[in-house]
Image 1: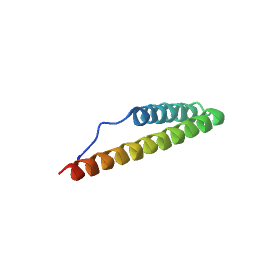
Image 2: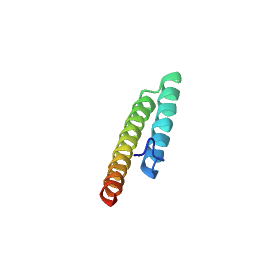
Image 3: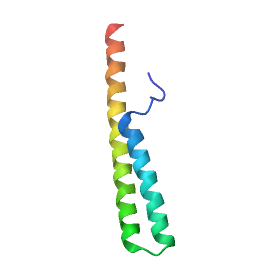
Image 4: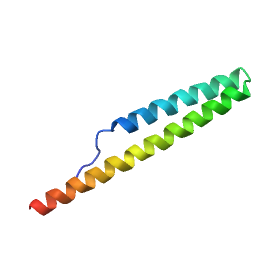
Length: 73
């Protein structure tokens, strides 16, 4: 059984998008730009969702691998 899998491409992109959105949101807050804050929050949320979908895909893949190893025994 895998303890911690290597993040897949979708997880990495999601983390990047979430971080980029958080920076944009914070800059918007500092310069009092409501549109930039809104866009940053939306990008952060989309990145979080993409990261979670990537995690789910990885965990499903790991579970399938575990079943395959169990069947081979």
